[in-house]
Image (cartoon, rainbow, N blue to C red; front, side, top):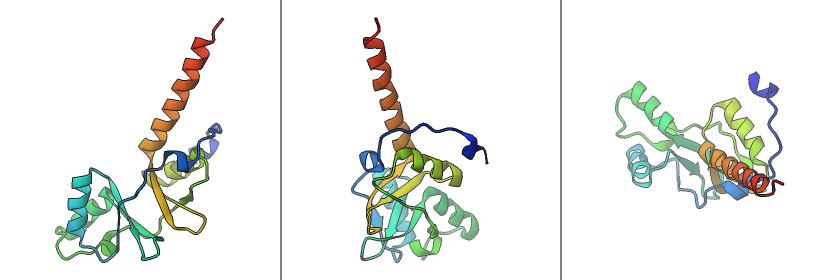
Amino acid sequence: MWLNMVFLPYIPIRLKDVMVEPVITLHGEAELMDVVKLMAEKDIGCIVVVNNDRKVCGIISERDIIKALGSKSFLENLKVKDVMSKDIMCMEEHRPIVEALRIMLANKIRHLPVVDSENKLRGIVSLRDIAGSVFMSLMTILSYVISNRT
């Protein structure tokens, strides 16, 4: 795969530095129409599905909802657990953003739940969050280099 051949430099930014918290979550028994309304109201692209211990069970994204519409043509009476992505990846909050970026690109995912050492949900990071953080870091470095030119 091309991504394994690309050198991604080490950037000393951890997921905990860029993750969004608190995370909007739901249980798998929630109605899918409630998810659609909540995502529109909060202007978000996904909702993390957790159990009572705040451990991640799945994630429901805009893509999952579109797939449900394509196969069922209606959303009434569907539960989150019926359409959520269940086999999802999470990363611990101390991991560097470059590792998250590699996983996200290799697996074609846009949102990655961030967990603590007990696998409890702590935050969420998106490709946009990572891109923004890297951009700001590069701009800071560039500004420093330009201001210290002799």
